[in-house]
Amino acid sequence: MENENPIVDDLVQEPAQQGAQQPVPQRAPLVILLSPWDGDIDLSTKTGKSLWDEGIKPLENKFSGNGRDLARFLADVTNRAKKCKWLPLLTIRRKSLLSQYGEISMDDVLFEKSLRDHIVPTTLAEARPKVNALMMFHFLYDSLGANPQKKLSTKLGAMDQDGPLLLKTVLDQTFVATQASTFAIKERFYELSLKKYKWNVQALNQDVREKLADLIAAGHASDNTDTMISLFRAYKTATNEEFLHAVDYWKNEWNSGALYDVEQLMDKADKKYVEIRDLGSWGKRSDKDDQIIALTTQVEALKKGGNSKINLTGYNNSNRSQSRTTKGDKNDRKGPKWKYQRSASSSNELRKNGKTYHWCTGPGHGGIGMWVVHAPGKCDPENKTQGKTNGSTNNNNIPSYNSKQALMSILKQQGNLSEDEIESKVEAMLAVMES
Image (cartoon, rainbow, N blue to C red; front, side, top):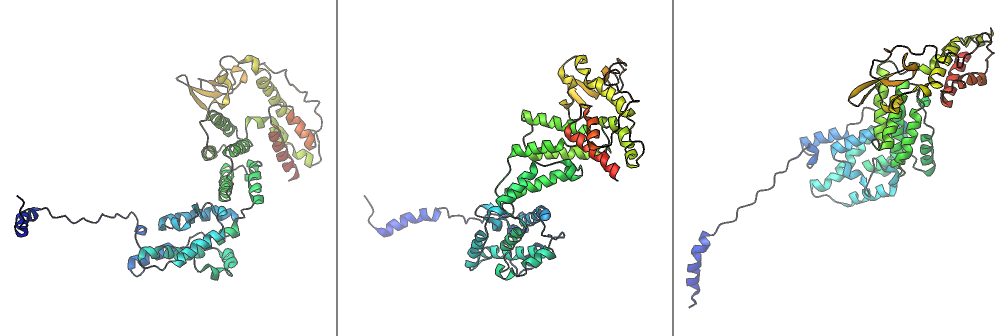
């Protein structure tokens, strides 16, 4: 029968309630800061003041305001923004003001500033965006050179010491994100030549990197395939044989799909250039230049008005040698085709079939370049008389050559020089004549 006395009920239930387990208070989760910038910044404290001083410290390399220095300036600003946790402040409409500034309008930046100004902070966390914007402003302004500061002198009041607004203004003064400028940048890719960069591969690649960044900023990223083709064409204007062989090897990798990224290709070219340059052989003349060495050394005769006939003894000897290696070698080649493909390796060694092969141009095997197991140049001459009658020239009956057309005609007779190589060599000789 149910007990109807509430007092008895309370007495019965009391022991159970007394024995019930009391709830354990929950401990606050442990917050681990990986950087002092991850936490709130209280400018009234010593720590907050030190963070402020560190954030506003200007760059050692002041920004000149010139387009050629923009990439370096943005790289320095990006590093500071990552360190000081400013990246959220520089993300506008889901785009980065550091890399896609050509796609972000001034109105977009002003709108984000109005949102910050509308908030009346009551906590350190709410005040952080304004603190960051103010800190960034002082950092950027003090990192500018005299010329960009002068251009900004009439606009500082409207900026209200806002960092993102200052950065956008500086970028607009430096970068012109128009269709015409985009076309001009892409057009330069089709005209790349190492000669324009004084044969410095690293300088060419750095310029390409900066131009690609400009295109990305304007929202007109260049097609990867087009850029790869432009780079290959530019690298082929080099005169160093080893570098050119490496370029052929990289092109084979690209065709097979093993090389697919523009930065990969430029990185390979940079390293190969440094390797050859440090060995002291980047400016060394190639085997092809032997055929005109006599012509180059005697070109002064045309300047002095003396005998206008040029002794082409060196040219004729090389011509006979080249005739042997270019006209007679096809019928003399034996074995697999890969043995005669210089582009099979980017270096002078090739690992194949468990053996190490070396690239050798003779004097053995008819002077034909091929992959061999012996050391380069350590082979016995074969068919010493081969090719001597091919392409021979009577040195006693040498015509007069005193014009660009005549010099080009001489080199064209070789048949193993490209039009660009012929033109570059002739220009070099004419420069000597005019000096």
